[in-house]
Image 1: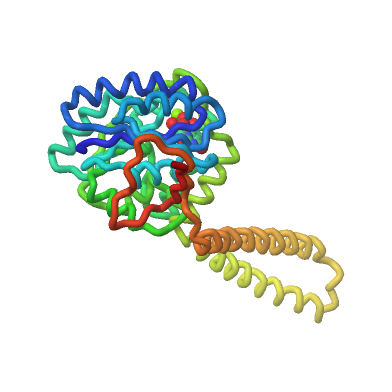
Image 2 (image 1 turned 30 degrees about the horizontal axis):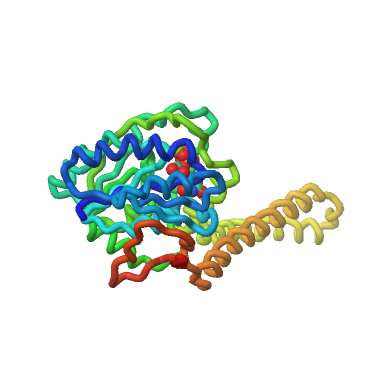
Length: 321
Ligand code: UDP
Ligand code: MG
């Protein structure tokens, strides 16, 4: 097998046939042997029926999660199950235009091991989501040192890179940043994000906040250091104010100064709580990692080839015969 195309789908009943219809001719035209790894991320609509129907073609291998595990888990499963020498990851809603596949393969032929799609234009997006993205990428770069501006999950990885990825043991992955962390010979191309033709984006504000917190705390311990720094500054302020307060006390002017007390109370109270909360997030990360649960559970599969050794599979496959 030369080429694997990994596509996650979550409640994309309408979109699945369209996406496959666009992708298959492009794959055929590459003249290489290919497979499509379609991961159904626990869809509750008719997506799985659509995928099993499509999987009459042996080259389409379909996997169904036991519930919705999220796109990151779907990517992990796709990378575990792909058999190709080169693997391309793509969104299932055609927002990552498959027309770029030949260009990605050409870059691979030039010897690159990771080919990343960069968003040239962020498609039709509201000012609000642009602002969110701006804040997220800005703070992520400051905290972790990785610049993900305009990065996307539209990527080509060669077998060697996927094998390296599969040795990563963590449960919480952030593919976009981890693939940078892996290194290897990389290049990028820019693509115009297409508009969704059916359905709508599955992202909710809540998911975005969670992803941002996860990504940043997963990639940087700097917030923990910032807390200690904040503590130090507060201590200096406390020291200065305590001299003033004591002086006032001994000079018999102690009654005034309530304002300072209240301000201090508020400042110390709020900073203690945020700091505790932040430490809590890190502890919860340790907690989930230490449980070492599988990243996903596959409950149904069509045209399965068990994941390649030697690396372990990062999820559980419990398919009935
Ligand atoms: N997706 C998924 N699991 C989820 C949410 C989304 O597998 O829990 C898939 C979805 O079907 C699509 C891709 O991930 O193929 C990108 O999702 P979406 O279009 O909702 O995200 P956006 O394009 O807005 O970033
Ligand atoms: Mg999309």
